[in-house]
Amino acid sequence: MTGVVVPEVMHGTGAPSPWLMRWAHLIAPGTRALDVACGHGRHSRWLASRGVNVTAIDRDEAALATMSTLAGVTTVSADLEGAPWPLPADATFDAVIVTNYLHRPLLARIAASVAPGGVLIYETFAQGNERYGKPSNPLFLLAPGELLDVAREAGLRVAGFEDVTLSAPRAACVQRLCATRASTPGENPGTAALYEATA
View 1 (cartoon, helix red, strand yellow):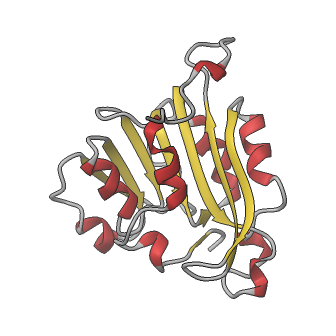
View 2: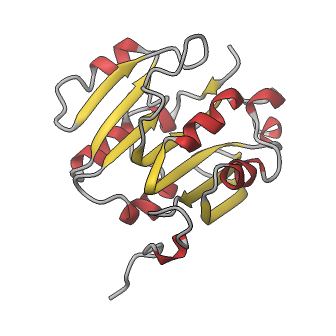
């Protein structure tokens, strides 16, 4: 196995990631989202409850089966590392969500799945996490600024980025990225409403 998924909270049925919730205002009801390596679908469930149409991909058929009756969720059983990309090459989504999953050969494909006007929300473990437990293998830990490089190479505009050590729900080093794609080629993607309006 060349990628890693850490099962705990990120892939269970608990509350969604605070990073996803921070940027969720960029994902409107009725849009299409891709949840990569979704596990039991905590993010798929949450997005669907907000009126988003979610395609949830994972290799764990039992986990996917727990979402089989959810309105707004289409599950796709696929081995993301040992088989070809399970979606049509030109399939794009208004939002692409990845948490606690890293398989570097898919990074460009994941970024390419962001539709014009869409958003990539990515959060996973980074170098330094070996001090706190698993994952500790460098193959499963992002190098400093690695998600920034992915966004740049894909032509995405970075709206938010963090490379931090968290203390809860357990100590961990993570990188977090929110990046958007321009609605039309050559357009400044900065016209997107990146920040939620405050009252």
